[in-house]
Image 1 (cartoon, each protein chain N blue to C red):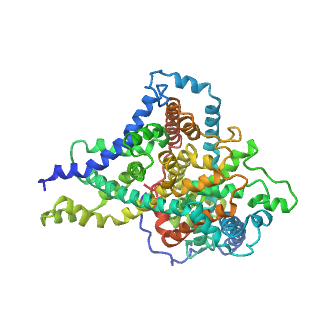
Image 2 (cartoon, rainbow over the protein chains, first blue to last red):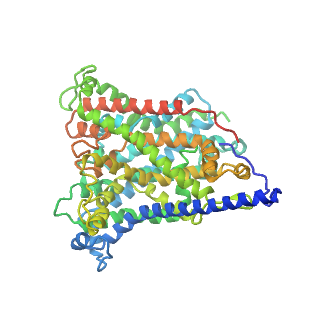
Image 3 (tube, rainbow over the protein chains, first blue to last red):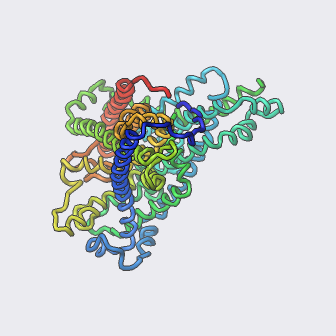
Length: 306
Length: 302
């Protein structure tokens, strides 16, 4: 993407036009703008409703009882039944799943950022034999579908004795997050100025200290983008925990747990509990999104704007 | 500058590279090898050459899955990009221009925030959410309304020829916001003078869109198409959680990832599942290469 500086001329006077033709053309243009903007507003508002209503409807249903959910799905709940939430949190184990997710994603992202930035830094700023080979080894991982590796991965993890453990899931998350992290951060480290690094070296800074105390702080914007990308990606992971944690129900993550409640819900299902579980899963994301909205948007799209 | 350099480089690389080779590279390499065996997990694997691939050719559910990927591959990018482009155009250049500065319609910031939100949610959670929305009786969000109005309920996930489209709709629902933001970034990089010049020449909004915005956004569109295409080759979480019987009714929504999962972890046909994985890999690679090839164009400098 080329960056260009726009000349600061917004206040320049509009060029003179021949009066008659200019005015009528401007009038039709004006009408067209109005019509277009009007239709556009309707379409935009319509899509906003489509996005918001299912989520809002879920929140409302979380307070209802089964009779209300079936009898009057479109009304407000008769009373706020907070017990739906406590039932979901404890009896349906959503609380445990939630905390498992928090633990796995925290460790996974932390590990990814540490190992990914170390590898990216060395690959971006040091010349040594095999540098390119290792870089392309990492980047090639971007092109492979995870499902190609699923069967052998299962046996690798099992043979290491890490099946049905959080350690196994965390290590796998880190490994599969490395290609994008290394690719993105290596590009970022390359843009950092040499002068600071050289000054540090002259002052007798070791390579390790230079990395942790000078280069990492300088790379903060890039690190934040990638960290957000990894948190959201790992939080949403479904197929890896499904395969790697299948026999340890107490270790399940949130996506897996809620999907299981839903898939195995029979006729006797606790619908209001399921709605409450969904609310527990969605609400924190809304809060996080509201706070970090800007960073999240740029973090997630940063992968596409390379 | 030189002292301690190699120990440092090795020290920094050893952990990430080991982890990556053990959990990513080795499994990928083994997948090709296992796909040539009849391994079922108990006895030692026996080499069967291309037998698994030959069986793939006669496997009805494999072809069904490939066919569904074909539908997804066309419908998902086309619908998503069309909607997202329209919205992004409205939000960035749809409003009136004042002082030579193009503006979006009113509330553009709000819409951008709302539209993007589904992207933050996990697909598995969205799948559970839409299971509720699509429920076939009065407890469903859509059918609750239809039945109140005295209409017959729509069996979104149960009617075989509707089920796949119901799933595509959810994928579009989630993806649109992301591409609105992506295209907005692309549109913001187009200098306002170009629009101004075109408008002075009497270009209408529609002309502006097709003659100015679209060509200048080509690179971003290409990226979007590749991303959505790769998403179309996955679709595991949504199919596994949302569809009837994980890929049903009667295989009407199954995808390769679903078949790989089923063959490997339900039937323990590891060799056969790996062959499907290899097929999926070649399909994905072919798609990405073809897209980049076919959409190659002179990019416009500005």
